[in-house]
Length: 110
Image 1 (tube, rainbow, N blue to C red):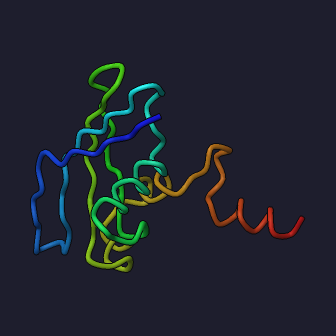
Image 2 (image 1 turned 135 degrees about the vertical axis):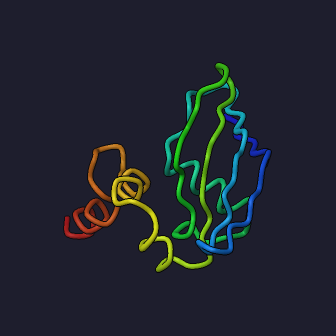
């Protein structure tokens, strides 16, 4: 499945120390990507750390593309202070519904 990322709008918000992005993600040959997959793809495209990228909203446009609203912060600490708790939770959960840190620690203990 190919996931192409096209930046449609890039607004720098110095007051909140972040970039507010509107992107179009083409996902031909598959379903809408998960928030975690989107975070990874956006972070790699921008050359940023995944901990600074938060997907706010995913809007399905067609069968093969979606519009994504995301924030990219200057550092992780600012992101954790500004982003609402539910957005942080949505962006960190795995498919099982457990936060990534709990999944990783359970896998390591087995």
